[in-house]
Length: 252
Length: 283
Image (cartoon, rainbow over all chains, first blue to last red; front, top):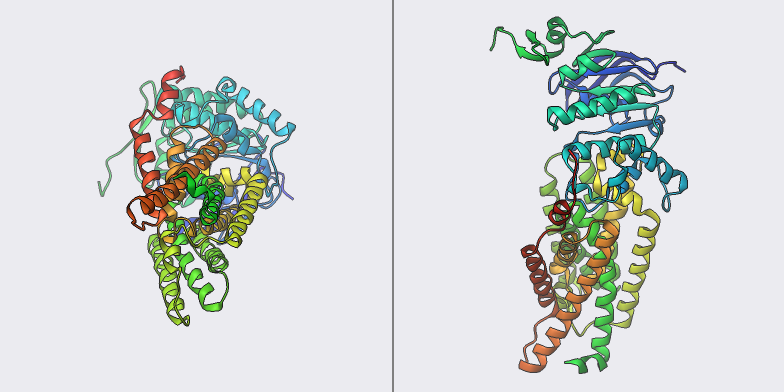
């Protein structure tokens, strides 16, 4: 039994003959608000999928809320990348959110507690008045809130967010990050993001992942931290809203 | 044309067609929403292998088609879950191998196979009360499964990765759904045939999707559109035969009616656009 919300020990994952995660050690405390940074293909989404029990490690160990990842699923909320589903699907907001109540084989419909949890989640993301709207009629920001509500409907202890603001403009992204900040007061939050400004503003700690993981116990982003994450020299520019640029280096 | 309703053979095929509409409209709504029409096309053609097996083994061809379709649905379903590339080739293989085996079994069957064409394109004449009973049983199976497991089916159709991540039995749910699709195809074999079944399984549902906002509503409308297409095609086939002496199987006529309905629906405003324009949506 472990006291960590998430504990990975020397965890490696090989997919299709390639090493995606290489001896990753990670300990996330209950209540921690952690961002995972890194380049595309660096293993960030794979790391979340290991925590969700979707990928089995090739070696090493993974514990989630003191259990195996598969056993812990019903206590974990997950917000995938928005592009994973069809916006033309004929479904209402409340019907998507109540999917969050399904965590195993189930016969029949939803009960009173399910409906209460759905209403709570919709209130939390301020979408109660759109509960009967078709998802396909919503804006990008609203769809993202629906997916967050779906994750919250299972009343999770751990919230996993996979690039939740990548398809949103900056203004809407800001409001979504404000919501994450609130949620982080109540549960452990792990977020994969490329949004340096929001990460610097919001999270408590940063892990940089590019097959191997480097943990940084503060949210301060330096060029050195980003260089470790992205695998090449990077300058961090700050003019109102920090962002990254590639610094001059060999091979560019 | 209405005198057809007093003819026993027409009563049987009409009842079979209307019962098939239930299976077709309900399962077709899942098929269209999950965008697995090509998988289902593979299943419908694979069912012909079971028709041939039924002839060869002296069983009901519909029973053979159901068994063959269920096996094919397991193969295609597991491939859909496991194979990351080359799935289209596998579907094409199941599609054509099913047809090939059907032809081989029929060639091995002694004597003449009188109603073979009815399994390819549908027929007014060859539906028995036993066939009607089988279609009714399939309807009961499908409606019971949907009543019990709709939340799982809906989730797997909407977001399969999320279903898996949430601990739902995503694999068994998908296989069950494909198994039900293969049974729905069996209900259509006598009325529209193997080759055209996929069209009736998709077009009414695709038409319905343009007009409604939920899966249950899509199912109800799709069942109605299926029933209208099938009844229209059957009456038209009978009417053409009576008026001009031409023997056109009902299957192609049913499909043409479903197609005209779908194409006409495209000309009208889409539900989603209408609702978006009617609501004040926030950023």
